[in-house]
Image (cartoon, rainbow, N blue to C red; front, side, top):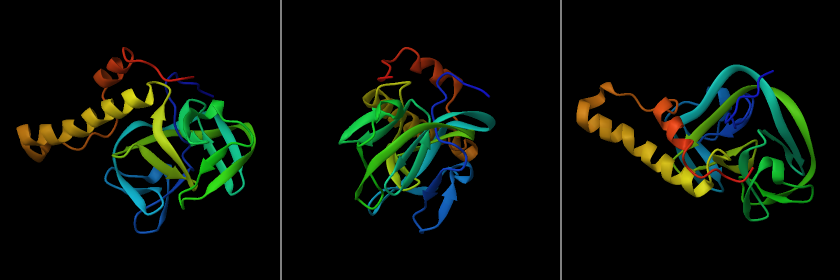
Length: 189
């Protein structure tokens, strides 16, 4: 079992809803997919910060009134109107669902699952397994992450203007960009 520093994401089997209403597992999401991020709201996946298929790791398993949510301890989600890391939520906290309603957390345990996936949407949110979360992790404070990812959204379009369509969309965060993240303020752990 691996515990990769900074690998803060979702398991391969997490499910998202696409704009056409179909379901897709996290491992099958593609750049350009428009995923549900809230009630009547969708956002395009523009890059991956993690996409590790052959890895097994520890996750936090949050059981709530309408299902369960499995994510790494340092992944930010919304609870009680705040952005909190998964390891900071508590039984009784309220989490938002993709239909606009709220659900109460009933238990919090650990789980082992396959894969580490973190697609980035243009809006910074994603609804998986019916729960609205952010795409941010404690690697960087959410405000810093949002600004950094805004820059990363701009790079492919700038590159295309300079060298044409030979440049594909950013698929996984480049190593130079990961290095920069080490110098930025970290989020709450």
